[in-house]
Amino acid sequence: MAKNNIEENFKELDEILEKMQDEEVSLDESFEMYKKGIEIVKDSNEQIEKIEKQIEVLEENTEE
Image 1 (cartoon, helix red, strand yellow):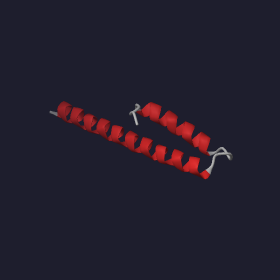
Image 2: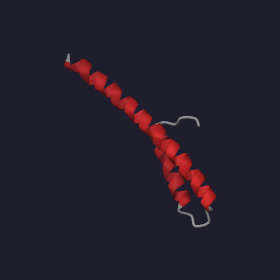
Image 3: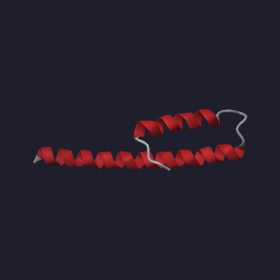
């Protein structure tokens, strides 16, 4: 899966949630969308953690 930026991930998650609410989506399709959503959430969390670490480094550098 190609990594998107956080905003793109949130947009894709919104689309997945909207599709999953469709009553005509099968259980198998819902499960596949769920798995994809979990991967997107994991990717977003990794990106957020990376940004948080960068902010910590910047804050440490400005305190010195």
